[in-house]
Image 1 (cartoon, rainbow, N blue to C red):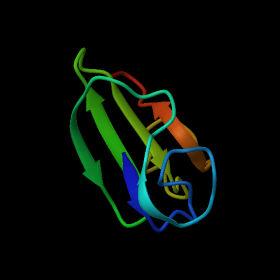
Image 2 (tube, rainbow, N blue to C red):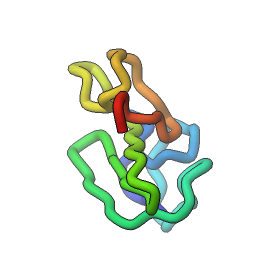
Image 3 (cartoon, rainbow, N blue to C red):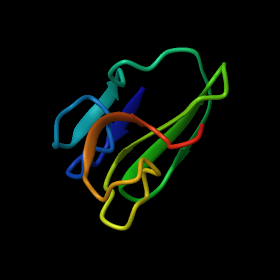
Image 4 (cartoon, rainbow, N blue to C red):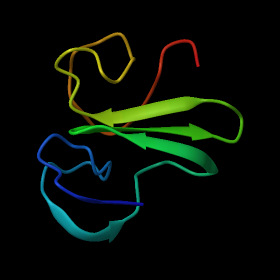
Length: 78
């Protein structure tokens, strides 16, 4: 679950708006660890796959693009 500032999609619910209460991240289950930056968020799931979402203006999401994602995007190679 994520909450707080969401203008860059870092909540992971597909929207670009602030969310003051815990909200489910779209299409993400079995999370074992998370990391959050100022405007992006990443999670590792049980099988070792890594997903990131939010601001991607300098490649923060690791998906090979520089395109914002409001939902979890698979990190290339993980």
